[in-house]
Image 1 (cartoon, rainbow, N blue to C red):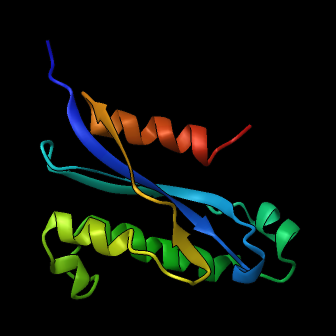
Image 2 (cartoon, one colour):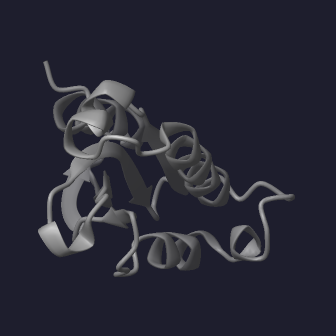
Length: 129
């Protein structure tokens, strides 16, 4: 029987007007130390973004989210943060910030398969019907 492992995750959000506290979930980041797993999945739905912020640059949002993804995967050319160890990258990516792209609080859970958990959370929290 496969063992359950502690994992942590946060939801990536686009907050076009920080003062209004309206946001759209656009991604999920999952970290599991035991499985040596840190990945980000995201999806930018331009029409949803335009609904709460007409004129927002969805391409720029996607570019910034791609940077999140590249840092989480530790890509060599993704800058100095991407060269940190996995726990440090996760903590940096999920740090509280007042920018257009923010993360939720970090939530813990148990999982046998971090990749499967990431995909499930992504479907449930980002790709809403």
